[in-house]
Length: 164
Length: 191
Ligand code: SF4
Image (cartoon, rainbow over all chains, first blue to last red; front, side):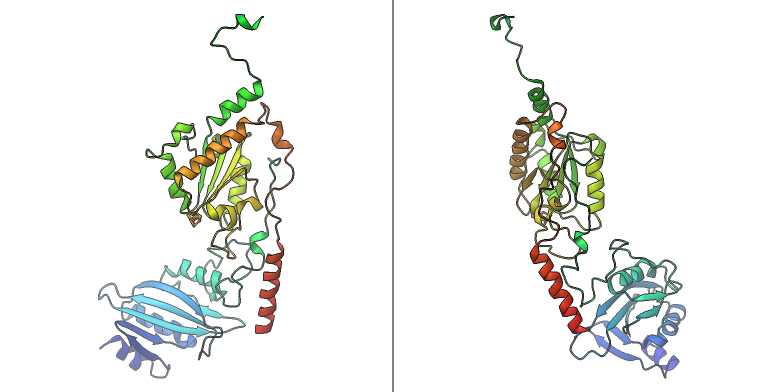
């Protein structure tokens, strides 16, 4: 039984959306079902590797209903099978359950998504910024953040030659 | 002692000039190489271009042993406090070369994360333009810096203490303020 059929029979009510492009198998998952489906895929179908976890900001994107898409790419290291799952979250308080308990790889990936998009992951052991400085307050990959920032790159003391 | 009694192998000079001459010919660079310009800096130091000809081949990774900071590459916001700290840790007398378009002005990276020229926040003695500058260009810069050191250097480095004014552009230029204001207005309109 293929993964797709297994998911359909296991979660008939979940409203999963299946699509395919070349050898990319993609599944749209409602955020409420996300944890159940990921747990099922990991424990029953041996998707034992989280290859990627990232997000997209769909602000003003044509035809989009939701603000953020969060993408999980899973790999079954025995069969080589790959699966792309996508779920959506919205302002004002975008939260998803952390998948850290399933895959340890999610630690830094979720921190990156939090840093860049401000999507928080409940249950994450250490949800801090990972790329931008700790005192940074904005979420720079959001589409409403100006490319040149809001003056953050100027907040430093100016040293002259006579200092130090 | 009359001049005619001085043997040929004795030179008359001032202490200031002798110290500056010695310093200029043994610059120890601190390679603050954060990006692609760093590759060119390495090429400058290696055999084909041979920075050793100018006495500046001893790259030290400890700021305590350096007297020439070469900022080679773009400096991210998160890196700037590190750069400032390393600069302050270097002993006097010290000089700073800003190498490449990115270190001088931010280059093409006019974004929230990249400092728009290190001279806004640390004192820079010499700018080397280019993206990246060729090794010849960097060596021309080092020769120009040697000239600068030889002219006007003092034994005790008293000339540095007088440079109390920042020499880079003002922290905010007008363009920047206008850009920030426009961005915020757009944001308000969006929400
Ligand atoms: S000036 Fe050009 S070569 Fe140098 S760091 Fe910037 S992009 Fe790279």
